[in-house]
Image (cartoon, rainbow, N blue to C red; front, side, top):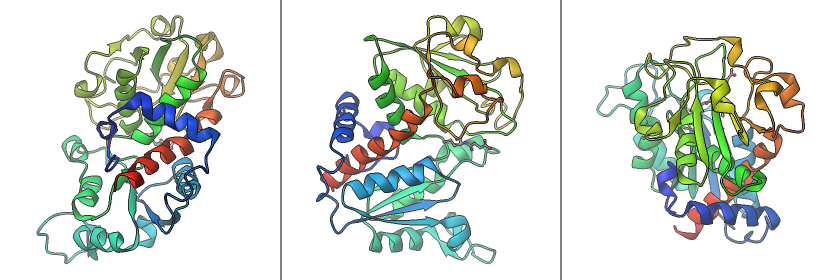
Length: 312
Ligand code: SN0
């Protein structure tokens, strides 16, 4: 693996999942691999799990970590080519990415979408600019349209917890007061298409994800029907893709409850809004595996960093 911008950078998903699970049993077995190497983690947005798990993963491999919140700690960056920089932006990404590359061996970036301009968000300007102007590999820690480290975590978690060879997995839209990105449901959907599961997406009409992502995946508008015999239920809000970035529905009937969950395991990438996305009774039950899921973030990041260190 040369870089990790999206799931397309994985050539052997099943092997990667197995390797992550084995790293969990021996997290320090490769602690010389990252010796004298540093990862620079650059955040344009908030983070709890990604920040801590990626640092932990890097440290398990013997790397050092540098973390910067670029919006508050760095110079405001210009991303447009050829712009006259007479405004608030003090530094161009061309210099910034090249300079960061002098100090670290891997750059990891988090940059959420603006959710106002579908085309612009789709271009992934921030992530792609780092890739273009950095001279070291780039890792996506959630970009405008993708969160591949989360999706890898989710696949690891399903693999660990599944009781049958081909479990039924339901991605169930949930209400939320704010407009949220499509990155998590996009990457989760793509990952479910790569592993052996019976996958169904359920959401209100108007909340269809990008059809280039959902492709042949089954969409069932009736949530009750979709949830029948589910083994894993992944609740997640996303804003409308069609009416881009808009909150069109906050119907509390879409919230996940124990009754709807049935016998299934409950998953969510976190952070999650209690009693909005999912009822307390679900998160506080044994059926919820959100903490074990969050714990797996370390091994998803570690297997990705390991592969990148081995191939650069
Ligand atoms: C982000 C998202 O993409 O949905 C990050 C998930 C890993 N979630 C949020 O921004 C939640 C914000 C909120 O106010 O609940």
